[in-house]
Length: 251
Picture 1 (cartoon, rainbow, N blue to C red):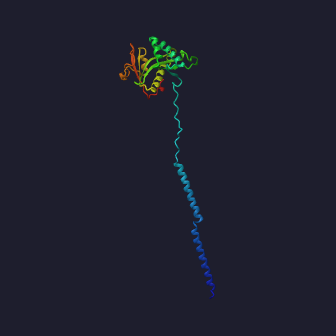
Picture 2 (picture 1 turned 180 degrees about the vertical axis):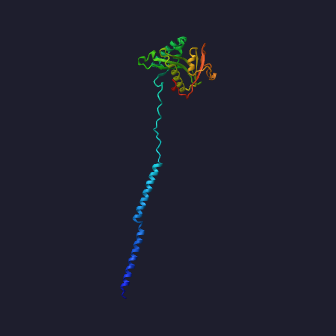
Picture 3 (picture 1 turned 60 degrees about the vertical axis):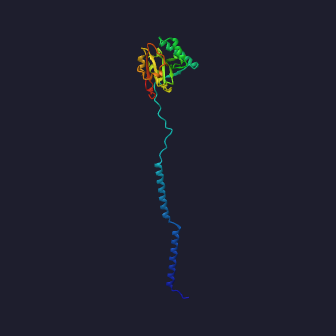
């Protein structure tokens, strides 16, 4: 074996070192990216995550509030008025109120026969709307009735006939006449009544005109003919009950 010179030994050592360094570089490439590139990639991922969260926050709209309440209806003059629909159902309270209504109509309508008033007020086909006193001392006595309207409804024909309407003498000129009629109209809508009809004497025509009644009857005659009684000396008047008019605003 020939001996290598010192220069050949040095060259051989350099070649082996270069070869070893090259293999180490190849191994690093196969192992994956460097730590600096990983950090940069993590920064990019963090930016993406924060953008996604921002977009989600901006794009997420608040769900509708299903518990939103409408503003309450403002108070009106009718809220504090005690009233009742009085029928002859045999109950003690209604019988006392019917007696009070009979007495009221007899006092305020002196030309009307008392027997006729009693017969209609206590008739089970008739109803009465009564405004009641708020004074506890007048409860269940005649003075509890401030005003009343006795009427009979004909549901099949969608109209009602007013038989009697009166306000106590001590409670007149206080607006109870208008309030009484408006309350009846509001109640009539719940019964499906379209028209109210009455026979008014000469003293009552002005009152009924103020309440929206007219002498020009537009309801087809076939709907009421034969159902209501004709009165000598009375003028037939009619009022259309509009279902969508809020009568609470009228005083």
